[in-house]
Length: 138
Image (cartoon, rainbow, N blue to C red; front, side, top):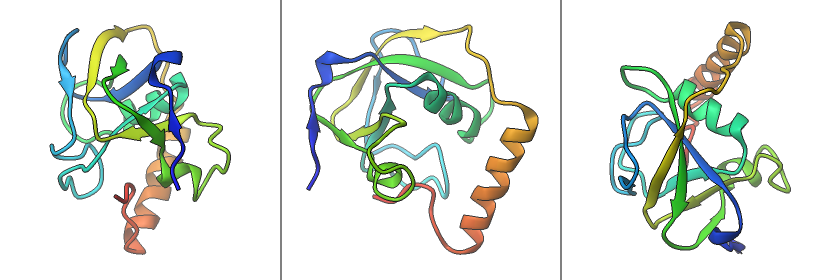
């Protein structure tokens, strides 16, 4: 059973390569930033800059990674792709929602991971892909 979080009590981020501006909505039903780019049933957000950095760095597409400050427009829940499988207790503060996220700003001075860390993560994701495991499961 998912635990619903009060979306108004925290600052949230979304990492991507999409070029967005304040007021834009990030909505479910669009192509995912990851894996086979199937239509996403959820949109993802985090309360940590590190998790948003991974999202910005690993998203598919052209252009630079971007980290947006977002405001959920509905209830959010723990992201089971991480909290149930990799990080019990949700230390990454990663969440998902079916409701749109409203962009309220952009973090422009974030620091990326080292090339070695990025390569290690990409290698890990390739191993999962070879095993038939999708990065995001709905």
